[in-house]
Image (cartoon, rainbow, N blue to C red):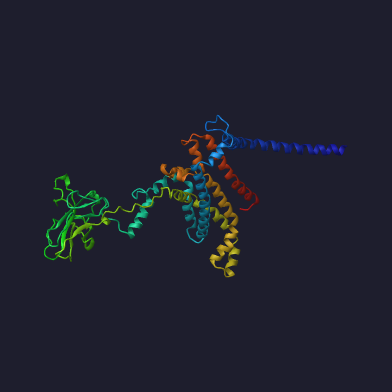
Length: 447
């Protein structure tokens, strides 16, 4: 009995100590549990319950909101866009992050390069959305991306010299807006030069090399037709319409054609003073002068990045810019942990760098790549800020994902919190499996 009492006396302090440690642990964990319950558990339970009621929350409708969710075309479009995001964005980010992580190991300024690519992570989605909303503007004078696109386009295809010009009505030319414009009658070589007035050109759009318009002169006896294409506008509007007045500018670079029986017989381009000469014509035949539409074609305005067809890829591009550094740094950390003797052994065996990348580096990085990919999938499912800010109002529905659709239905004018809660439950159900997969991999020490 003495031995039993002694054993109990020894065990009781140990038991009491363990109980004190447990109570202390619960005391420290309790604030976190309260916060978790208030910020996570309660909203989830409330959303599930709210999804079973109507828009106002007064009438129980059961699964009606879930049925409506899959009948609504706008919601189905949001589901489709979310699927595109899930497939495209994590795949591109993981692949590009892998390539950049491998390449940065071979450059001298690897740390600075990684820092530059990681900097966008410090920018909020709100700020990134505003930046790319401006960058995607279709007007090349405002959108930097279209400014670059238009610059490259115009380097290979010269733009029309006077896209806004139009003929002075009833004063020498006829035609529809945008051209072509033709002379109202026919002309014969050797006659008096023609004045071809144009208007609708801003003073700043006149080329800097333009000179005062030359008065039309007779062609002479060399079988040619002459004339002047000019801006029929004088300072103070003191001139005579249809006549070359002092102070009016010639329009250089205008293509002029002489037509005979509907076919082009001769062409000329106006000089700095707007004058032209069409030579080599048959002096006995009548000709019609034409300013072709190529002189007045609207300039290339770039790509409509925020139109219905490209708005989702454009927003994904902004997302890639923000998260590229995250993917590269995580994969780079995994790459640094690969044993160098394995790579050196592959090189000694005669493997090329491409073979080492495909057969050694990628298989060894598979756990890291999987975790990065799944983490990005979870993040993509919740994307909201970029879509809501970058997509203009008229195409908002074309760009919607589940998160933006949920907000619009609940608070953005739909005023249907029953359907919005059903969407939030759907979003939660889609995110939870990916989260469980990631947590299990972390517990197994797979990354």
